[in-house]
Image (cartoon, rainbow, N blue to C red; front, side, top):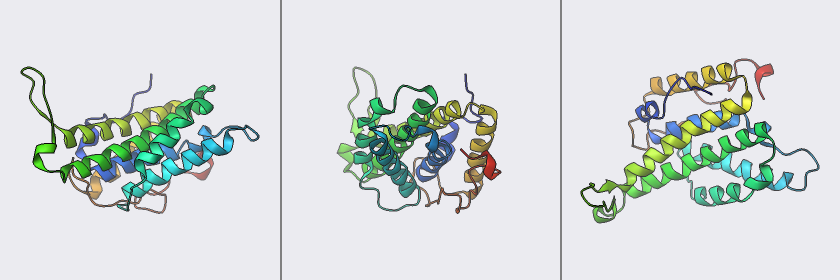
Amino acid sequence: MTHMRYTADDLKTLPLRAIVALAARCARRVERLAALPDGHPDAARVKAAADEAMRVAETFARGESCSSAEQAVVAIEAVHEAASGEIIRENAYAAIVRAVHAAATAARAIAEEHEPAERRIMGGHGNQPLAPVAGISADLAAMGAFTAALNAAEAVGSTDEFTRWAAEDFRKLQELKLGHYPEAGDPIDPSPAGPLGPLWPKPDLGL
């Protein structure tokens, strides 16, 4: 069983854009493993859905307009069956799915914070208290990002190397002090050209 070097609750020390940036980087590390073989009849459809999912997650992290998040979730879930059948590919694909889910739920949490006060709670049952909707969406984003990392580590197989570099991303994001959970936080470029640097320490370790 894979054990990450941080927990889903640890991610709540980061704002939402940073959480999604972490998920996006984990998914980027394994995206090539999610591809179907050349010549597969669904290869282009799966690749297009994965590309859009990654674009949405990274766009959200950078603080740019992310209006297509829900559509990207629908599109990548629609090709789930086509991507199934091989455990490494399934885990890599799941990492991408969880990354875009994290972006969609984080975007929803931010939107819900701007809803009228009477619409920002979910009704409780019996003696259970009312739950803030935005807080639930933020928690789902953190869990999605954590699950993306787990799925990606399982896809790689060499989990110790993967979890070390995911933990390094987490450490750098904390040091950047981009804001507080469950706020959106400052934009962050999750690509290798951004402040988090390369996805892998050496090019020959990249997947």
